[in-house]
Length: 168
Image (cartoon, rainbow, N blue to C red):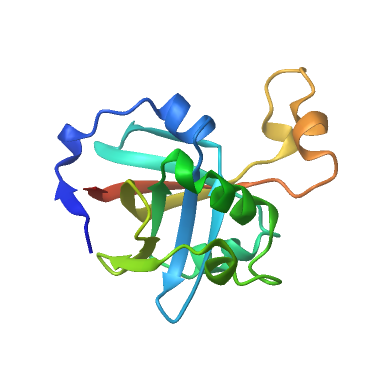
């Protein structure tokens, strides 16, 4: 494996671009059975004196059950050369497609969690807390529930400690 573990203090990224524009793959499960999905929503910061990443998964996503039953997961970031693979992983379900086979991504294990050799940056995350977003929690009247959810399930948020950072 060609990843180098770095101290999180050496991680200098723009999370707005990294997550919102470049996207990340959220991967959970064991080497024998895992799934991954593309995410473009999330936050990085400090909470409870821990370096955290928060990601959001709808309960109808195939990855949801993998995340629920795993202590850890990875958030993996890729270069432009993998954009098609990320688009595929965000628009096709692992219930119906073998994402590894169809994207050509190479599974890899880091600190007991699954990621992909093609990633340029991998955050190994340990779940700390989860909560469900609900319509009654919105504090503004700018139509977010209608625009974003439109009858679809609301997301579960996972606040997770970043326990490992790997770069190429």
